[in-house]
Image 1: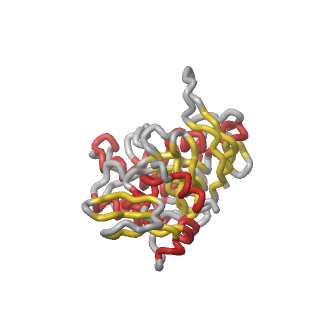
Image 2: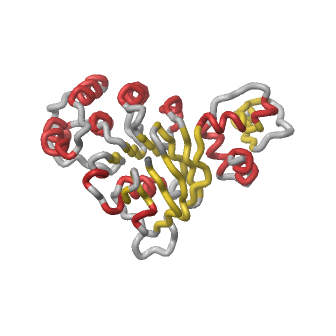
Image 3: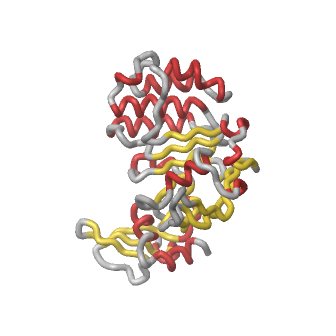
Length: 279
């Protein structure tokens, strides 16, 4: 269980707040983290993963232990993968030899299956991989660690369409029900069927932290040629109107449109939409 309490974070020599008064609790499941560029997504993941130290330390805890303390018991159950992550060994097999002793949940079977699904060899030199294949190898390794907390920052960057679908299937297969996985991404559609909740950052603040089921019980996402009189937010797209309306007036349930939801929460409609979602 990840608990974040009144988290405010500023980088050194900056008065600007990268994160401001963030409060939430994140349990097991696969969670989507959304936010515009510079909203603080990577900063939040880095604080959860212990890459950055929260101040005070108790502002970010995993199972009651501050991540800023970098306790081995917590670090061995937490892994973060970003676009900037570099594996410091020649091959994934060598990475396993030197790195996995720190991660007791590592599974050779999972690694083998993931690498096979991506069409990769465990023994191939990492520096000979293309950018996309390097990302596939790193994702395979991250999934194989089976950490309690897995943080993925833009995991589909560099992947082609087929590989993105493969990642979806691998995450559905190998992410444990008791595992907490947070995915920060701008390409929501690739993994949309996996997400159980969504967190949205806007202007360094966490404006929404809600389960998908709860959102779908309160609002509906519809498309029409004419505006709906009770629309909470409307976006014109390719000549059609995409709208968020109260669930009670929609007449039928709908799946969350993450792009429409994100745009609405960056707009003047945010206050009214959040009033309904938080009711």
